Image 1 (cartoon, one colour):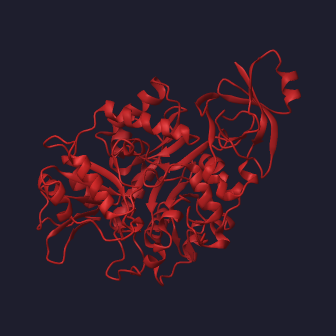
Image 2 (tube, helix red, strand yellow; image 1 turned 120 degrees about the vertical axis):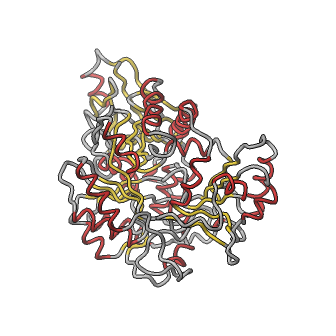
Image 3 (cartoon, one colour; image 1 turned 90 degrees about the vertical axis):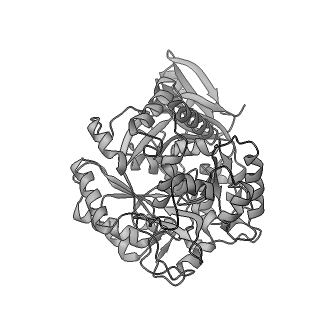
Length: 532
């Protein structure tokens, strides 16, 4: 069935400002673009339906270049602490949820962020013990690199004052040597064996919730990293296939493969970019460091607000080299979580030592803090930067205290990166940040914090144009996944994936992005969401 889409602002994103009057789709593909009269005349025998956009704005489907789809869905089913503005509000919510628990049940919450509280003092283990003494409590920080637990959880996991720090992690202690309940980076893994198991039905429920929420945000796909956290690799991959392929929750997923499950993936006979048009395998994912919020991002200098630390390396330098070498033997690019400049430098060393010998590119995820010489080295390599513009609204101004006087030339400097010729893709890192791409666009083009009465601009020269910002989530994501020949633009032969908005975002005050509504989301030529 051929469908004509017309009577709207249809931006192809092939070049800045390029628009067409009508688009004809059939069989999940864009068959033709042009004037309405020409398409009607040429395809009159095939047209079964015309969709009147009533002046709305059609764009290529937004694709999040880095998120955690199962975690995003699960975060909406757990105790959500992300919107809370004080420690007291968090503790009240925990106490209320605890009353609903049976004996032995875990209380799991996520999203707390002490930097967003009116008073930034941390919750202590003792405070958790006072309100939930008999049930284990586990609360993930917004960055997911720090977890707070109570004494019952520590007891269940067998963690005590003599437990050593694991490689790449920190078990925090108070000044008196007692555990304070804070676990950082790989130390969080000590809790994993104790947590409730994930059945395939539970994973499917989380996936469906995540995909349905993405539809409402105008997302038609995502590059997602989930395969190492919910039991076996096969268990999780099967959930993706059942939901997206068998049950037809159509969503374009590009699966990053955590290095800890890469052997399972390889032994099953899978290869880079194998899979289907809706569920395919991407690069091997490696965590190199932690987060700025938890002061575990690996810096080349001491933290400005805590000179006792330069962050945490998840792997030793030699271990990282070995992982990259392993990826090359498996014929797969890498995608690395790199927040600190030293983490970025280590990865550069590794991919220069073991260069990519195949089609594709390696991916740096996040990369907020860079030195000029590192960017100059990266420009000579086949790399893509997966950036998260919404980080700016969450991290400023406190991130400046973290950096202090450190030798950083690029601070969330996306315009400079584009000007240097670095290819960039746009994501959210949901559920760590809101998945809404319109929030990401707002941060990219304004470099302000929503609802800031002073409208402080953090780096005026680094503002992106609206075309550059939208490209991050369209052609940028497509390029990152080696899909630039079939996705990311409205062109003949491309997938019929569209995001349809109620405002022409190229001709509004950027602050109106925060009030812009998604009217329709279209995947494979089918409306998967409509606001009506």
